[in-house]
Length: 198
Image: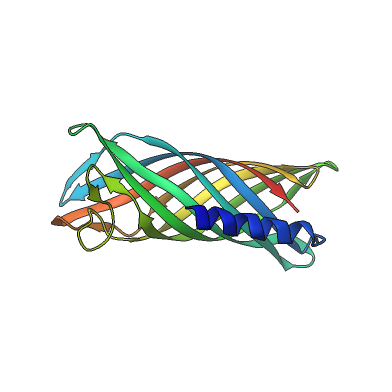
């Protein structure tokens, strides 16, 4: 965790020395996450309680068409996800490194305000977490490390630098629950994000 935060700080420090251009917009993001997990076995689906946490990361928006404000948005995020299992009163902590690949469009409203809807895919790699005394990931873990899904949302930029967004991301491919071969798990997360563009 400390190494990840140090990397983000170094990237941010580098970005402050670079003049941001409209064709390439680098930004930092952080915010509140409300995550949940959906467990499915055959035709039976069970959704457990939400877990409140956070996310932090960096983004790079690359303009695809010079005459049109359509951008490819890439990023690297640390997401603290998981859920609360009511029957055991335990939190399942699942920390991921997330790589989103999105398309977004900049809708200019006046001189200072931009609306930015986005849509795309993400890949998450589970790196740490606990479920009671057991690890979340790994050989003796509760769930598999890989998470692949979709992301949709909308953001707003003010005076080009300041960013506020809300979005939803959810697993497309079911993740195996290692203790039960026939049980599949899907992550679902709502993110409220603040950011700064350089």
